[in-house]
Length: 433
Image (cartoon, rainbow, N blue to C red; front, side, top):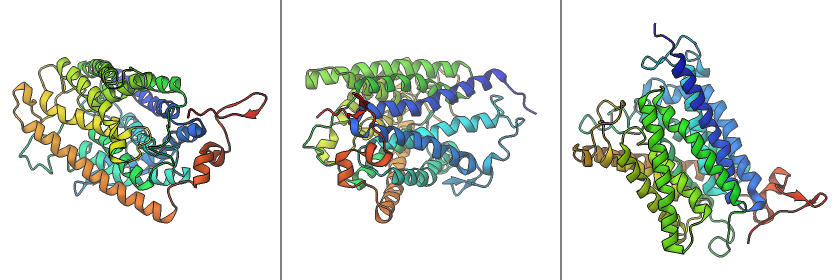
């Protein structure tokens, strides 16, 4: 019987709590970016995902992600139904001495934040009930298979797809499973839902930039649980992941601000907050697989490319309300692909069996090819299945609120509340136009 490691277990409970904090943090980040008449709805989309996905995860989600493999795409949802067989306190992870129950809780928080990320792409216009249905179906048909394929021994992680011809993919904490997955889903859902009224003609500026910066700060704090916790042990690899997360994020913020200054003449608070998130996204898959120089390079590239990518929606005409595509899809692709250049086993106590060093560290192009293949596979799978789900919901229950509700404000019409009530009870909604 394996022995319980109380230090690692305490570390993982703390890491899970930090990642759980990321979803309310995202609610602040997204809530500040929308107009004042829909801030509560935006925040409710994150809280709604937190409630719904948590329940789904403990009933069948963990089992579908990490149960016995079915065809390389999904785990058996009945293996650990209701966490049976996982909740035994004597059921421990062999390598780290952490109870599987704690590991299941940690992974729950990843599923929650991934779904919540998508909501930013369709801010100001989606029905709340349609969002909850979409969230439940999407986590079942997209997130759980993706998590199994990459982390659960399936098609993209167990070398089943690559047939031993290329190194195993590296995704330490969720570049494909979380960020590419959510980013492409946000793009597809935004296109199918359609543009907001006035998009491209009227300014739709953030109504509360302090909320945005508070949310970014809390996301950065919680992200240490996200990345360092993915080691499942309090060791040197967790320390490397923590340090890489810090420096990549810091440089990404500076790179975003420099890009803004050159392009627009101003380095903005919104840019600082967005640069922080871009850096966090990009370093996530690589946090324990690159050294200091690799982390700095990933942060710099992500800061510049994501800052440029957020303008693509105006060029191509898709209404990604809060830049999920520019930050999460592009940032996830940057981090996942740059692993193929910067991966190294020389400065880490962790390295996946079957992975290779990157192109700049003497490993040749094999790992780069693997990373590109897996990134494209994630885009294709998530994009196609998300489109099917969104089109089905649009044809049945409908995705969007009415034009009257959209113009008048979703908060009051859907939730019966307003974010800002002052002056003797008079209802005042502040909106920057």
